[in-house]
Length: 175
Image 1 (cartoon, rainbow, N blue to C red):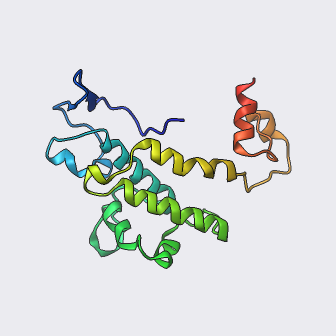
Image 2: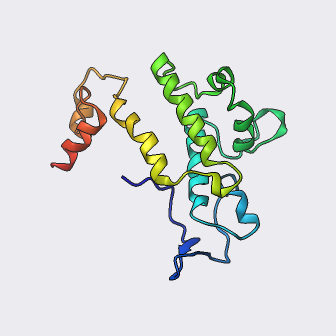
């Protein structure tokens, strides 16, 4: 399993195993790791961007959001302000997310992971392999919470609402 935000071709592994960066900067400000300012970018910049995406999934907010309190539109900076307080995280969760006890524990773990992914120093960020290992158990737990009373969803997408996501994926792969 490989987790990847996108490959913009900015960080490339050079022949000697070291990383190099294109001189042309591309990307959206809210996802760019702080090291872009110095030009010393490694693959940990992708980890940073993935952490921002995790924060967005939890909060339903944009990476740069003018509606954030304290006049700081940067999601990462705002998220750090609430990260160590479970009550604050609970208040910040996207309202479309089911917040039962089991889901909340998962959200707290993902929030902690997002914080590690977006730490300012690249050497302190986890590798994407570690990120995948933390997130993988959540895939097995997830099941659709909305059960339709009609069979159109199954006909259109080939989904069985009574199977877990890994079971559905296995079924799709065998087609």
